[in-house]
Length: 234
Image (tube, rainbow, N blue to C red; front, side, top):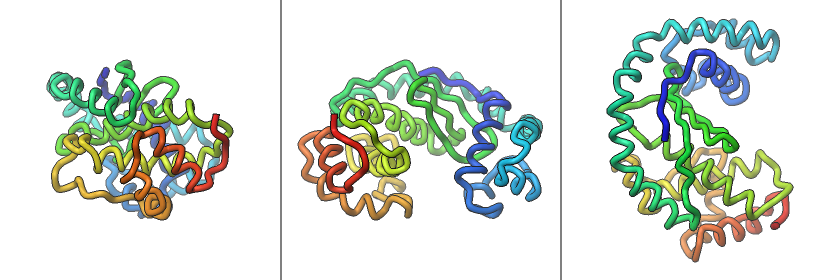
């Protein structure tokens, strides 16, 4: 895993997408935890979808003002890398045992400075996540699991609907993180199984399948059928 601080332009692009596609309102809980100040006017302009280039440039300018957080991460990068090396072997071997697939070690993780969220690009093995010393590698592992599991998903299914498949991925990633031997990566007080409200109905339907699974792939296939997701088995 290669760690770095996200450059302001990259972070502005991801923050723009986060505001436009994820946040529900200016007072959205996640949005209020920003480490930078963005006006309601800019927020509403982003939601409208107009002047994208200019707005990303403005976000870049604002993100660059958050020098303190950037310096904090840069100072901590050597320790972050050392701490990751201490757990990587155990983490990857546990993921392989749980999912039946070896983990690709060629990942890049870029730490965000301004907003508390994360994301990934499965084709490039790129992760971005807000840097939080207390949670350490919890968020990193969450996004890594998404990429890892998409490789398994794409081997099993075709012609799937992205929205449905993505929502279900939030269910099985949480199951892997909180309900298996992988939970060592999460602080003890956070290990109780819980899901986003949007995916709770899915979770309730597939938890019985999870509890009696013989393998991760079997769980995915049986859940696919149970949830009647759009697409086909390969």
